[in-house]
Image (cartoon, rainbow over all chains, first blue to last red; front, side, top):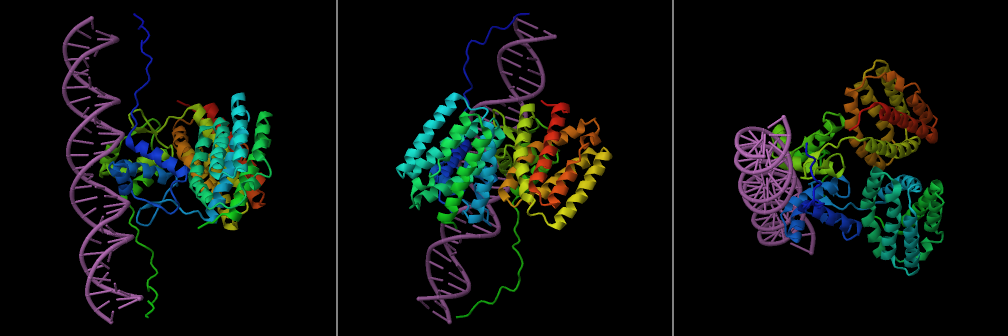
Length: 230
Length: 230
DNA sequence: AATCATATTTTGTGATCGCAGATCGCGAAA
DNA sequence: TTTCGCGATCTGCGATCACAAAATATGATT
């Protein structure tokens, strides 16, 4: 029996991406970047017109966002970016505490030296953004910092749950950055990020998780005290 | 200026439910009840034909299931109930440990006496089902037992995350019940359910969570050792 | 000016159509 | 027997249409 010669071309698949997938990615990005204000109605026809496509792919994308509770249906079925009440925010942050604490703890065992190096660099950028009162940069680096850790937690499932939480909190955080008038550096009076990095470097998952939880908890307290809710 | 008299009828809205919502509910129920075998391809046309509707509402329902990772897309976009590998199962159970442990801990403060009474009744039914080797009943009561607790955790968000996890594990558990040949009572040699009830009655969230985690962990170990994976 | 009734537009929802790529099956050639 | 080619079918995907309910705008009346 002849053994087949090795397939000469090691090309990957072409993999054309359907339009509804592109719409979905664009919407999630816009959502997490806070480009959509809370209470905004997202109608498939308007969006389709704006994107110059039919409304079918838009519907598919919106359905997925609804399933993740990133959008909620009105009585008539219109989908809207839910307004952030105090209760919902507190609930989301409590759940973040649970999931992100666990992810941080698990990540301690998996972070490579390269990860740790990148992490402390982002941590430095984060501190700099806080000192410069650049809240947009701060939020951006905060996201990168935390997700660099969570991606190393070794659990696809847990990472996914955390992403759905951020999809709900993200819009509100960005909206808050607009009404921000306080002192950003004041949030950092305890450098939780530094403690997280240091604990992760020691492979001390428990300490890292504790520091991360403090960071989330303090941020939540600050916003509950200072931000405007609906 | 005439003040409108109070609307005489305090009836709620009729609230006709769209078809895609009905399809979604039917699919989630079928999924969690294990009526769909892993690896099964769900095509919108076939389902639409079976339900005697157009494939549009089916597409909407499938999109939502895809967003929750209850279904995964093949290369061509067909959606299929993902096969359960050892790794995925272990990952899901690890994440269940995190979320359901936390939910149990939070629930301790909110469980009413009626909840506790109902819980110990379900616990008794559970034990009976195990003695009778009735694995379907066992899984049913197991679901009711745990979600009666989780619903009392006070966190809509956390409950939602747990539901998405069960949507992924549910099908596999039911599939396993078919190939089950062991001794069901053997799983219960430590009565974790009883410990959970007792701890909740004492409002001891920490102990209740610990017992619940043991229950999940032991079940996971048993299945990892005995069940067939793909 | 304020309010109510009516007309117009918006919007969700579902059905149908057409296209293109994927999949499957059958038969011929090696 | 296996493998390859090709036609039929399946299926995802997107566009368009139709309909009803809701929202909005308009205009008349008090």
